[in-house]
Image (cartoon, rainbow, N blue to C red):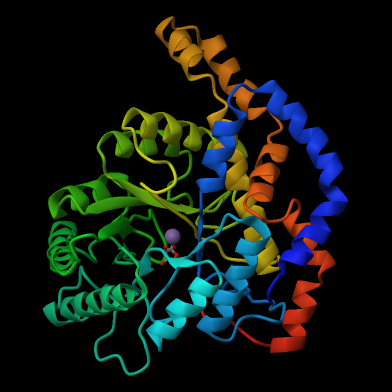
Length: 424
Ligand code: LRH
Ligand code: MN
């Protein structure tokens, strides 16, 4: 369903005056409103092609209807998210869930919707129909060289699909590991995996990046062969300068200090990007900022500080992607909330008085240091984020417009109430 410029303007007109009042207040409170707006507008987040339908757990799935039945319909849904927010100009594809059959058409359709292709994702955590060798006991770690070869060839095929679409990066998440002590020789598993990644790395086009995503547990529950940031950093350091670590917020053991991990990976020049989501227990893949909004703010604090220290471009030098799964909410509303939470955390981090913070840190003035962070975290930046949307030609209140335009009803009428999108 396309959202026309007229619909955007009509909906914004109703909220314009109250928005302007709120915007004038917050922009009056800060001295870098224009710079913050420029950075907010430029900051684009990729939408996962595997999160446009209703997810499920092993206990059940409760579909909401109107789900995309093809990659073309997924592109239309992401195009709608971008029209509503001006913040989601990219798709991250997962292969083979979303193989671009006619790449030229898919590329043209994405362009029509103002979209580009971000990181490609390979999948050696499921066995596909007709697949020769099983990944039951892993893929790149596997004791059988033929299974490792199959996984390597799959990743190289994924790079080829990405090249046809203009993508410039490959994300490798391996479910490899073990669920019982004694099942696996950790050293051999690491070396097999490194060897396999090296073969994929050597097939990377010159201007591509490889993201190695780590995860502490699931689907293996004793060891994961890329189990934490240290292991991922070991791989990416041995692979070479085009290999980076990808941080999925839900892939940590309880109480991990993710903002410290981010600061150190940035310092090493080995942070490649993010899979944003939120969680209370495991890899819950919940709406971004719905459980730990302060942690998300602290992560963006380290990102802004670390990227400025390296004179990096906030919008383009790291890969910003959402990786969520929707069990209870309308998938598109859930993604709209996640986009808002990411922009709000980034805006607050841009308000931190860095000079005063360094001073407080150098004086070991713990209270002042914390108060400086709280001043930014407790600021209401919603009007700033809304003004950035307005200047991008998008809507002031995306979810309100999504509901007022009865988008889900339209999609159900167009696609049916029982359709099921590929993905998680
Ligand atoms: C693994 C993961 C990975 C994807 C998958 C869909 O938990 O985060 O990024 O391949 O979810
Ligand atoms: Mn992920």
